[in-house]
Amino acid sequence: MFQDIIKILSSSEMVSYILEGFLHSILVTIFAALLGLFLGFVVAVVKIAPNNNKWMKVPKIVCDFYTTIFRGTPVALQLFIMVFAVFAIPGFKPYAAIITFGINSGAYVSESIRAGIMSVDQGQMEAGRAMGLTWLQTMIRIILPQAIKNIIPAIGNEMIALLKETSIIGWVGSTPGSLTFDLNAAASTIYRTIPNYLASGILVGCCYLLVVYAMVFFIKYIEKRLKRNER
Amino acid sequence: MSVNEMQNPLLQVKNLHKSFGKLDVLKGVNSDIYKGDVVAVIGPSGCGKSTFLRCLNFLEMPSAGEILFNDQLIYKNERVYLKRQMKELLALKKEQKFDEAAQAQYNEINERYTSLRKDEKALEKELLKGINTHRQKIGMVFQQFNLFPHLTVLKNITLAPVKLKKMTEEQANEKAMELLKKIGLEDKANVYPATLSGGQKQRIAIVRALAMEPEVMLFDEPTSALDPEMVGEVLKVMTELAKEGMTMIVVTHEMGFAKEVANRVIFMNDGVIKEENNPKDFFANPKDERLKDFLSKVL
Ligand SMILES: Nc1ncnc2c1ncn2[C@@H]1O[C@H](COP(=O)(O)OP(=O)(O)OP(=O)(O)O)[C@@H](O)[C@H]1O
Ligand SMILES: [Mg+2]
Image (tube, rainbow over the protein chains, first blue to last red):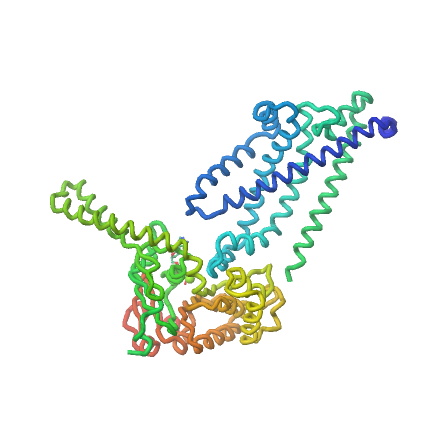
């Protein structure tokens, strides 16, 4: 097996596959994460807005529907439907996939953010409102800064899960040069030349581990910074 | 008649009702609060004291009644009574007793209801629009302090005045320092609330409300969450405030404060004001049976 690993690493073609996959995995994750964070944030705020506001009724129903559907069905199924039905536009495949991962992730992120906001003592909102701040002002200046400490670890988890979730992007077909050619696709491509799953698997697995390790480090750093202005 | 009563009340509460679903908490509270009044509100747990206070700044929306602030009608809902009357009349139909007289009565009420509804709905809209401006004139101090833990003491105090454009940042800082000095906590301006004792927290919560320069202050059991040795320092700040002429409504279990600082004491029970008097007569000659019983337990 070691021989096979050496063989892969000493072939510039194989190494370029891995590097390309590495880059694409990260890019897909970043774009999906940005979309997911944005969606998750908006959906969480809509869900948490007071019930007596009539303008919020329809958005609330839409958001509930959204989280139910996207958390309730497998992401692979969502991917196929989005790529081959909803966005069946030539050349749009990788973007459709990123959108799918983003929307899927947003559903989970919104629940993390919602839980974080709910964990802030209700008295904080009352204190803000009692002074004459609007709901949104109180939310932004008082609730969210406190909620973020509870939200960050959960979101970090979700981002790590998202990175690994993107490994199914190749299921809709991938060719080198396209964003759909991720680490997982690189492993399958290498297997065709050097038929040892374990060798390419270990190499690609190490790449994933490396990214996850960097993410964990980054999350810890943010958590620490947030804790600093506590007292 | 005292000097106070010759002018119009700052706050008029008429027949105020509040229900939570089927639970009727306030069942017709009437009270006029004059400028400079210090009103102590006492009563058994669960009788609706907090709910009463929270209706005044609309943290809870009342179910019926009328509230005037500075002679301006800000809340009014009478149509719920009419609605109930109409329902009762309609119930007669089932018993086959819905005669012509009932029909006539029903029509009359319905007409009044329809005309009221329009005005009251418009007023409600007005209230929702102006609710934040209204709240700026009413300071509130909570049992649990509710300081913002992620902000320094100074920021806790200046956040609202600056955000709501009542003052510039410099003005707000100056005002905050002045207030902090008054309660002897100016050295705490730049620390976070977590490092403070309960008494210090509550004094800062009072200052935070004062920074908005409110016309009336509501206190909901401000000393109930404190260790006994810290109650005094908070009551002292409140006493000072009363002396300066601040209008205050204070829900409290501190009978000493009610006796010595308040100029009116209110006993609430079963969602209504059962008795109200000046502190001397209130404690010396209670009339209501439940109040006598209550006082015998807390004094
Ligand atoms: N948001 C709410 N939803 C439902 N019921 C409520 C709500 N707030 C208060 N209540 C109920 O209304 C009643 C009166 O509550 P309130 O807090 O006004 O009493 P209180 O006189 O302040 O009592 P305490 O001395 O314990 O503070 C209680 O039975 C309480 O359970
Ligand atoms: Mg209470």
